[in-house]
Length: 426
Image 1: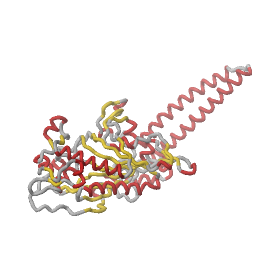
Image 2: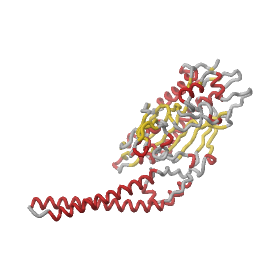
Image 3: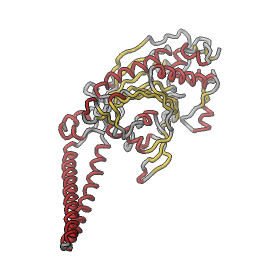
């Protein structure tokens, strides 16, 4: 949620920032609503004060044996005024909240306007593999080596599902062990959260109410509100760990990571460019998350990016880092870097990690604060997250970049400690 005081103080700056996302907002209409809302709130507060005073006056009259009929009639009339004013305030409060809930985060000043065509390549690491034999695509390799069963995955779950089998399942688990071991050694606390979350969790993360259609809803409430849903990413759970809490400054940063399957109702697996495990309804991911003081926010994002890059580099994969343009940055985030691996069969890069800074946007929605040193007023934390990593696009990259002329695939050395041999298919 945006800071409403920033909207009041710098309406044109907010409007221009949202234009970078391609979003035209009638800020003046909101400011008029905001004025009406605040006036109604003051009216309710004044009337409630008058009601308290007249109640006290009636009590004093009774103790003194005085006549209370007149004051009681006035109190009744005042109660009706309070009820009417509260009804007006409730309607205005809903409109006020709905407007703010519909606004995305403001992109940072150094995030350029536009869509993915304006994404900036920050750096490329390693060289694209030059194979001197007829290379296979990841879907063919996975099928030839018996790693992924697409046909039976569809039979069990429908389009957008697959089954890891044999060495494919072992490779998936080795990747997860590699991530978990690395993050634990880096001092992050391991969390295994529920896979079923409440509406409040999705709201705090910034996914609800606008993006409710992207999740698998298990239970709907009034107006179709998703009261319980399958988590689309562990970020949705981790950001809520300290919802409605005030942390001490000495507790920050708080660093967590979680392993979960991720469940997405949208799926592009039927498109030829996203065949195999590149996109589906369920995939595995390890997620990093930090709660930090605002002044540590930028450094924390670079640290998270370095951790994601370390994992990809450890797998011996060619990759690049891009900084996303405003329209390609998710609604809750102010700045995002993507780590993208090269897929020779597509002649393109596929994102395996998004490293994002929400600033105080999620903290405002979830009422997550910290108490600064020296007794200053409590302030909102900044929240950051990073995929580290999602496996469903790593497996295609490993297969394609590490394939050999004889049809086998070299297993990255960092994975061999978890029971993997040197090659797949050997």
